[in-house]
Length: 106
Image (tube, rainbow, N blue to C red; front, side, top):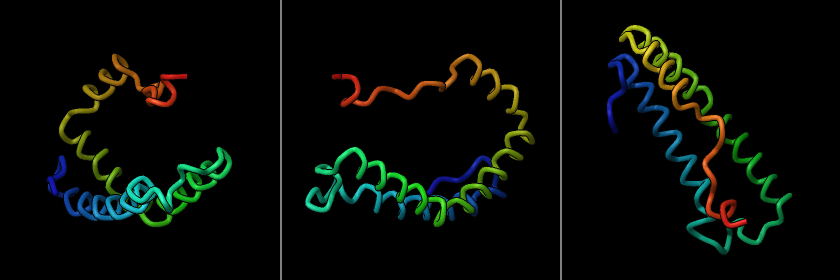
């Protein structure tokens, strides 16, 4: 796994990456194994599954993410990157999600 912006944050990053990768593998499993997947689910069932996965993520990885994020925020400030990030967010705000293939064909 790659190193973080700050060496202090690298162990937190590794913990979070390991947690996220394990969770994400389970999240993707229905796409890999369609027989057990959400392809035949109704919108309500899919929404329920998404909520369950979000709750699962929070329970398993939320604390690791918050710890890593807090460390990164300190490293960003310590490295003088706060203004650069602020300017980038102003110039290229991520306010609207990119269209997915299913949405763009509608």
